[in-house]
Image (cartoon, rainbow, N blue to C red; front, side, top):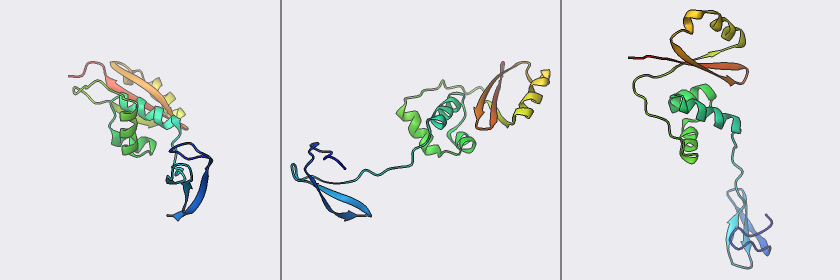
Length: 137
């Protein structure tokens, strides 16, 4: 710790340990503080993928199962980045997790592609295929 978070003074001294974290005292403003906790940081790749999947209509829990990231974290990201998706109640997209060879076989079958919209996104060494019917009743 180089300076006080309250007044930015460099006149700080150690002032004990609380919950296994060093406590400091600022001689300038008499402020007591501890070192910032270094939390677990999630890679931006997962944040972007979660937002893409959210915009495609998947629920928080579905995204949690796919990416392995807590649904609460995903909700917090949606609030933080103010992501709004269009409310569509007529349908819910279906998704599949496929390997490269399975994805190639999927596109060889023309019947699976007619009358539907498809988006493919990478998930590590696999691919996620999101499909929705074009004219759903």
